[in-house]
Image (tube, rainbow, N blue to C red; front, side):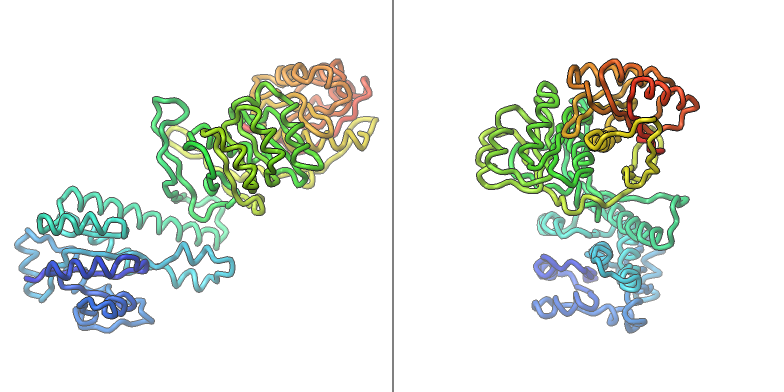
Length: 511
């Protein structure tokens, strides 16, 4: 019996050449609609599905291949006598090769103006059914969903006349990953459409961006995946202009830097080390902002990540070139800046779309055996019910410092305290087991600069000891969420020292 291949693809790249090659190997090719038309025009002998089924395409093409003459050919066990008997009784021919990819659902919903009707019409039904049937029956059927596999299949067919079970199983596994990802995209779209916040099943899909040399430590295997249709303001969407491959820790640190720098509309520079900011500066120019970020902690910035929310000029590049940095990420780099910075062969230069930095997404965090999901923490002072709790109001300069501190402290590991003036961070206390401990670290780092500065806390003061420490260091303004049963003790202590204290009502824990 003549061997048969079924080809029906949306992505037609390379398919005519593939079909021509397998036709030359003696395969009868069956196809549908646009694929059949394209193969015919390319001079490839092809039979229509309707010629096989004896039934026309109906319902605007919604039903074409959902037919026993197709699925019997896909699911029959070639080595099972009873299956062979039934095929002969019903005049069904086995299908040996299936080359199918699906309606472009992802590309459809990526369009800003997409309608619900258009999205739903691009949900493929027959394609996944054929793929899953073929993959289930991979002991006998070679199923291809990815055009990059054409050459490997052809090489085996030409060499041995058939593909190996190992290859068929590998291709089948790829099919099930593909259909699972396809269904996950549909499930996500429909879930969003219906407004269900916490569905009983959470289906997500990611695409491999790169295999990593290792994870947090050399003995840990790791890989980097990107979310389809995810935010463009993401390290997963960054273009690397120069430098060696990003590591696991590089990616985490870059994400942390980006989350901070997107808080600022004015020129801002953020230096990050181990996912905590070591220096943040704002200014009238990006050069001024970077100088302040550097001055905030010239020791810790060494070997760090720098994120800048304005293009990098040659002048700024020369400053950046003076120290060892792992990564610089910015909206763009002047060619002269690239020339300066690329003198160091290992430094990574990344660009991405800063114009779309405000798109919120769910944050997924794995725990052993489970997954946590939450909204991105995007609340700012504009969303807060801000009130001055003390007798003294902050001065204009103090307000500017408090706002800067509040933007930064939400991105520092809890317990977190940040000391700032109106231009830059002066001290950062991160990840401490008690709040006064975080304050002592930040105040010690700020030193004499703490006099007249502002202090920001990511959560309330459980007692007045942090205010006491701040006052003794010379802090004149404090911003914190409030909400402790001992708020009045902290407010009284602030009044005692003439400190202006602002309560936001918003906590910014970061674990």
